Image 1 (cartoon, rainbow, N blue to C red):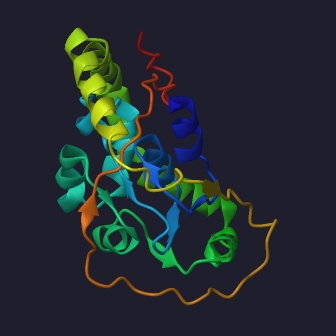
Image 2 (image 1 turned 30 degrees about the horizontal axis):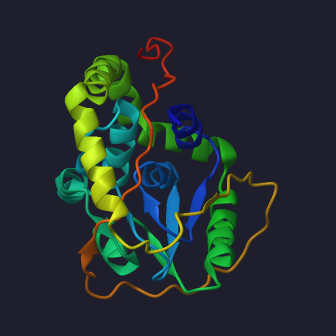
Length: 231
């Protein structure tokens, strides 16, 4: 899974996430790898629920979330384990835009087409610079962080938290399918110009509710060449 994060997050071309359902934990992190995130109105919830399960974030997953969300909400998102409906997610910065039902893919492709018109070399260089802080933090402390995270994930007491969480979750009524996230990596030569569809601004934040699955721990593949996978 972390190899997937690494590949999508550092992809040099435009990537747009079209989210039509729940994007929870690992699915949320994957969406955060994209350059833009668009979600169907009332189509699902988004958030990171790791601490509800009793496990910390692997280094790359945390750094991607830190990169993607407004700093003022980072503690709320990661420590509470809360998930958000589309309007609240837009207001807090989990997503960039809300699409009306039936228009998600069209809107996402329109955004991708606009980004694809930019100079590929200039876009790739700028994207690398935007992500430079993540690269530097991973090279500096990623291995040590993942070693500590692995120790917690494999501790006997963590299994107790996970079992308790699963038992509590199974008592809840299912609220729908997990997210399907369509990622559109494009080259400027592949698509022409397209007029953007008008998207509705967010109203007041919706109520917060928790809906977790759990993503498995994997080690970061590394971009600098100096960071090896943790055991």
